[in-house]
Image (cartoon, rainbow, N blue to C red; front, side):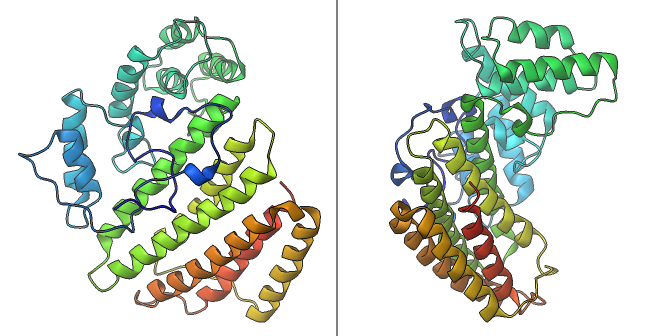
Length: 347
């Protein structure tokens, strides 16, 4: 079943190059992807599907272990099937630097800068990986970027290579954020983050039993809808500008990573303490201020409010099934809602 209120503009784990979209994409009403909270994914059938499809089915199955996910994705890569290189990234479900470089090599072979255009994110990531590997290959990294349009993203990698050449202890580029210095790279990087967050949820749901899993899925689905609603507000806030798509995706990533950090710490989550009524009152005040500044966003802000209320109820119900989880989560969630409202005041 396909969810109509979910996170990404592509299905999870497609080739990274396909994540690069035009600078003026359609509005996020068209953004759809299969949600982790949809019907239970089918089990992998080794004899009935290609390895890349088996790997995806295994990722999405609560019955499939992390080790099985890793084995299937590595086998799919070795079989030269199309898998997303983000699978093997540091924050992916199967972190493996060598496999990520192997995957990037394959993508770049089909999508280099031979036409003199701006580099794809895959080209930038491969060049950075060559600089940061145990035995840096600075010559090849520079050669890879030489035919590209020398935009700010290319200069970022070249400057990093120069620092590495003079000081071997220069820290590695940790994520695509450091490379996202052009609109093209920013859109692709945010898509990569969204893809990674989606995969993390698939892996996280493997840890819950039959009693908690339906509540986990319900909360995930409600949060998907809320993240998209926040994205819609920001997208409209940047109407007419080239940064509206990166800004939308960045807002969604911020919301998703915040919940990721909280779920990853369960059951030992440090929740904040404050009078709930006071927080709710401040939300109302700040929401009113936001609407006075941007009355044209009322429909989107109202939709985000409704989505947040639904998510908060679902999240509290899920946490109630986790032994030792905080009983003051409602306050923490209210403060998160306040943070999101205040973000509208300082875009």
